[in-house]
Image: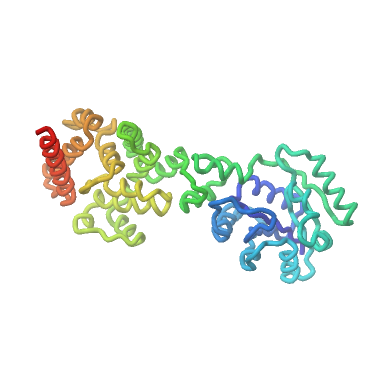
Length: 399
């Protein structure tokens, strides 16, 4: 049996790793290509904020699972401690008696292999196959393989492949800035976003694609308008424009689901709908949307709360909550009596706009014979009392 071991920190696993795995399978035609994420790399310190070994193992599953012949191996995670290659090769030799083992390494690993722990054991018991680095000197790699052959009498060679310009260090730096998507598979990037790994800020074009896929086509212009309006309001009132965009993009992510599906989502996410919500998918979508945004897209609690209250409002709303509520109400596709007044007021006095919006919503619902949710009345009452208190304080100061 021919077994190729492809180890590393995979922090995170990316398209370059996939290219190397495919090249190894094509060139070596092994019975197994074992992807072996380390528990603790012996040659370097993991970057601050790196995911747990278990999380990196799961990312590897997502990165390589569709490559025929590739298997994810948790041998180093189960062993714990520093992940020395010699120890792993010994375990693999015991697990697969008589197997021919090949160690797949990158350029840097090839050129430093003689400094590893027990290099003589590694080079005696495994063939070495190296893949060249993007922009690297192939002659240096060939020379490194030749040196190993001459010095140790081992089987060392370079795999012919076209490297992909991807490096985990650069990807980790790009993820908090909304970058990195082009170097990661969608399955890996989705898991990174969901788990809030590497300080990621979800790439907005990626997030739009994901969110729009959850909507009825006719709902998309409204969500696009809501995003534009939310960002504009955030800049006007000093809120985080990125978080405003994320909340607006996702605020209707469960809107198209009928009531029975909404109730199933409540059960899935451990939500308890109240008497009003149990009979209204329009009310319930705000609650289920917030839960889905947390679970699938790893949004912040601030964003989730803005989604949660964008339909009814609530007493003592945070700034982002008010912005998303108002953006949903006045975005450019909205057309109803009073909308222009509301749009103007939203940029002059946000609380006054909130009061007017709640009043208009109350009147609209009652005109259709629908009883508004009590929390909307409580939100309006809170704003009125707050306004009265502020005016009294201003008058007192002036006296």
